[in-house]
Length: 226
Image (cartoon, rainbow, N blue to C red):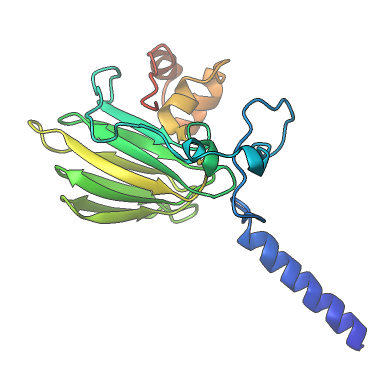
């Protein structure tokens, strides 16, 4: 009886451990600088030999103090993501950073990060932000943020940011709990997929006529991620 209890306890601990590391796993050494020259495919990046690691592996002259161009897409925003692909030293550390620029009335449209929670702070301007909870409630939680305010978007949930000011731009900085958080922009994914999703499927899902779906699929779905 005692042995079966130990087995059950071990199974519960293993399950708890798996859930705790369901996103980015904790590193098993001080660092694992990505070896971008390696052709070995792993979940993340192969480690560079620690003897070859330099300070530059943890550095990027990202110029995040400089405004970004928000006129390159129709949504009026520009996301500059700093992740393990840009700073090799971020590999296995479970964190990344983004600067987000918003034109007047610009937005970072509804999207999800499948592998990260996001914490965002407003550096300049005002943002209207919000996220949706999962089915069946789909509760909408929103807030108007001013300079210095902070807001959290839980991992995997659909969220957005919108600059309601028609005259002034806005800027935010976000930290994300993954070296590669990923981003799925809802409209781009649904209506701009390659190949296109059958319009019968989308017409039924959105309860609209197929010609409306065809029109949406014909639009140019630009990416605001850089």
